[in-house]
Length: 120
Image (cartoon, rainbow, N blue to C red; front, side):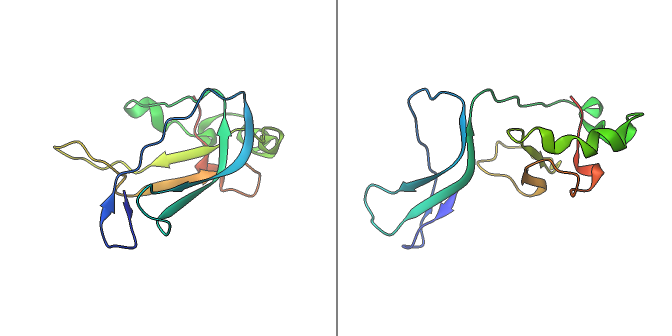
């Protein structure tokens, strides 16, 4: 959801033609009925996307791996991987947006707290 300059809440959707793996790039989207309502998405990558969901098995962090320090140190060797974790929020109804974010969209690096890394 995005609040436009007119105060209205807008649900944005865009369909792109297939793209070869590339990025990171920035994409700016402008509302068709307004020249002032726009959203810019930064650090966009095209390619394979792996969304992982589950229960307790999805909270297995790198800190629980025997070589966690080494894995964190070499994380910068993977510049096209992004970390993101939505907060665990219960809802009885479908939601259009996230209530909160635990780990924002981030490039893995040794500077991030090791708790930010989840294994797959």
